[in-house]
Image 1 (cartoon, rainbow, N blue to C red):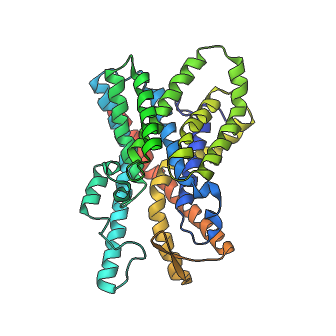
Image 2 (cartoon, helix red, strand yellow):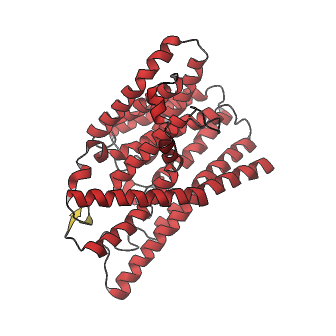
Image 3 (cartoon, rainbow, N blue to C red):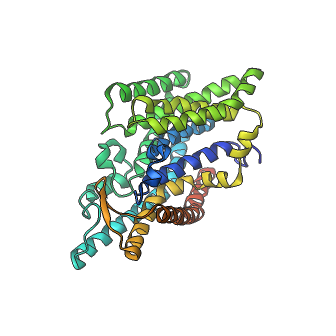
Length: 376
């Protein structure tokens, strides 16, 4: 399969990286039905893969729009396309989360069946719903932002980072790269020096996204130079950068210190894939199944929380296993073999739901938003 898909801005290998990262995030969120899964260091630190998403997003957005936003109209069109890309799936699973919360409330009020996690409409109250509806939850403290469909915090952060990007490109065309670099460095410095663990969502997005922009800019400059040495060494930088990312996720504690190396490591992986000639690593990453996983990765990221909640209620009803409190959530316990089977079934269901979400919601609304822009 060609490195560049039908969409000229889509690189199959990077799509696969996005899919693999999304899968790791999903596995990171699977409850500890058995310690087996969460004993794997990469899964235990899987939350850091969201920062890889941010770097990829910055790279893609800069590559497509870094020189194109020259008027207010183009900025508005850009933001509308971003809205059409993100919001429909976000809204659907916000409403699903609201339905789940309502069901929990009805079960508790009329049947005396209490929630195994947080009481209904306590954290997930009306204010939280408004924050999520308006995509502003990333501006609140982390714990407050983990309401309803909790992964949507990154969508909130990214949507407003798009606004910052577009305005910088519009108003500071000649110095935009310098500003992008300053934003990335200042964000990383604050994360390192102050470790604002309760307020780090926007900082993580700014650091990753604008690191991705710098990566795209650097790659464009390198491509304009005849650099056989760079082309040859970049092939081996692919496995090296992947190994670095795995190591960082495996040893990082929180989102500072060693964890901050995820930004340059992700940038290195993107550059290595983009600059290297055809090779065995790119052939592996352009496998159709991995590219498909990348294609549905946004739907998978947004849908898996609701799927997981429903799935856990079903296994409670079917198996009646003893439960223990893990991170404030009552979690049924299983043997290693049982947990492995349950994880495999859950992933299969999540893939099916995500594929349908992509076909029925994400893709049609994305195409509709593009059609409206063309018509305008």
